[in-house]
Image 1 (cartoon, rainbow, N blue to C red):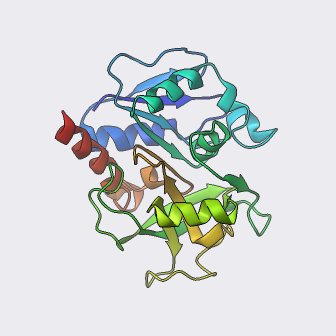
Image 2: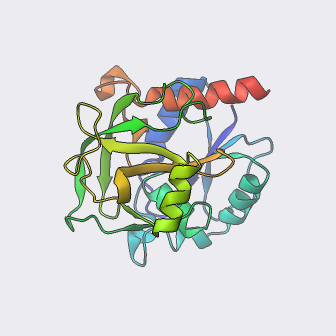
Length: 233
């Protein structure tokens, strides 16, 4: 798997993502600064990692979505290339028009830094191939603007087309208001593009890929990506 991680001013999770990708694939991803205009030849996967691009001084991700590299990311997506956005990366994908909806201030109006539990709503995608539908896993969250929002028609379309990737649940795997700490519509934690080649989510699976990190709950996502590319090679 040939992966590229995009680094914006204020990105702070690129090294975590690098560790996760190396752990799953055995290969080091390319690290690209946002002023680059092209992806490395043969790139399979583009990752937009977490952090606070441009200090979140406008809308989270709004300035990063206009960075020079994003034209190449859009072209990669248009070709059917894989794109993963985590936390601030999810915000950037939405601001760039790659995924629908918006990310508002958390319902508590507080920054949330804690573990959460997610349930896999769509199995068999490049991002979820190592999980069964209904499987639950733990992941850290660290965000102030993670409250996923979309109009009812968009939410109904996401549900109807099976494009909800992950949902916040409690320890029993049930959808409850208490499990939805940021207030996201319908407990949505992550979504997919219609072609299933792009995924955005707020929690950080890359921060649980090794026992030294406290667990390997997030590793299946990166193993899924490696396996999906091996199957199409």
